[in-house]
Length: 264
Image 1 (cartoon, one colour):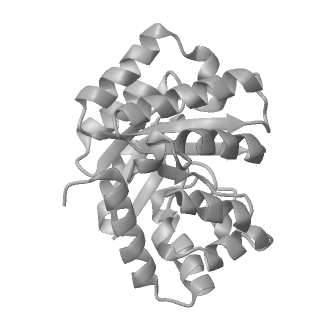
Image 2 (image 1 turned 135 degrees about the vertical axis):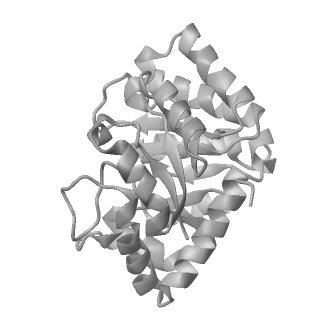
């Protein structure tokens, strides 16, 4: 079975066929999905999907581009979901995005840290978005999860979503106990850095994800992504590591079940 650790089925890209698509996932070998909050509007939609479908779980949090919408009411809504809904199993999507620069860097860093502390208080993993912000993301993670901090002792730290940085940084993140989220990009031809990371980092530190409706793998690049395309990612990882697709599925499934503490 395949565990999709980062999806956005709440996105309007699925408005026309969401129910039929989700209903077909189990038959396609998709055992669990984490639907991930990113915006103010998405938080109740994520909760609704997690409550409706037994194999979908949720994460609540604000994407760095959206943290300008965080107010007291929304902050309390997120906290209430984390505290009282057993289907909400992580804080995310949180982090830093210096590519689009929608929000000032100091604002992004402030809310990244605040949402991390929210997760740490509840012993929940985080789902980290980081784009064109390698140094600051690492600095925040080391500040709040580095050796000697309360976060260092946490067993379930989180995922560096859609990992795109160097092998050296990958080793630092996995050394701190984080997983790397691997999606459709690994199937692209000219991603030597990511392919090197996937080859070198042990499988027990990798997880599967789609980021759907974005980042569809080859041969569907440019189309709407979904969990149906994850076998292409599995095959790419298996090829890079010289192992079977079954081993990739089984190990990443166990990794995700451990991280999110999903009941067997």
